[in-house]
Amino acid sequence: DVKVTQSSRYLVKRTGEKVFLECVQDMDHENMFWYRQDPGLGLRLIYFSYDVKMKEKGDIPEGYSVSREKKERFSLILESASTNQTSMYLCASSSPHYLLEAFFGQGTRLTVV
Amino acid sequence: TQLLEQSPQFLSIQEGENLTVYCNSSSVFSSLQWYRQEPGEGPVLLVTVVTGGEVKKLKRLTFQFGDARKDSSLHITAAQPGDTGLYLCAGGSGGSNYKLTFGKGTLLTVNP
Image (cartoon, rainbow over all chains, first blue to last red; front, side):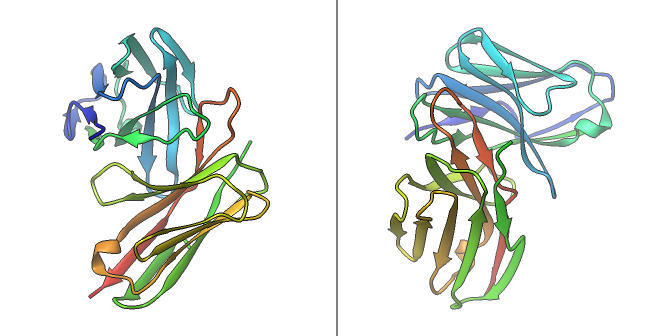
């Protein structure tokens, strides 16, 4: 069974902290993505990676960075957490196939106080 | 910029009723997917349609891709409380574009 695993289901962090969200996939997928999901705004793409050490900005990259040192792992970093980054964060992976079917992790509910 | 509009945004029905939700765009997509997301979980892929006019069935769920590959619909027959969730459509453009375009979803509640 295909699996995308996010390191935490729930996180509470303080304003100004550096926050790391980890994602691991076991499907040998080249593509990996980080989204945030907010009521009324839907899924918004933060960053994606199509290969190890390769990354591209999505629609809302400000305040975030990413790291992909190994094919199976994609990390999202909040350099200095702010309250407007309180959200549900979703990691996904897909193969570079024209269908682009995405497999999602269970999500991380991040609260910044 | 490609956009996918989903309607209705919210839908609350009684168990046993039928329903249809829609996903529309002015852009052509090479493939279109439907996902279901339960509260507090990540979206789960239900189906992918790729051919204009294609119809796929998954038990009580029927998915259709428009002839022009710009729109899709999801029909649920005899809805059950277990169908409750957020239904998302997503379009892929193929080529070198790695990204999916997601709609904002239809939040379905099926009351017992």
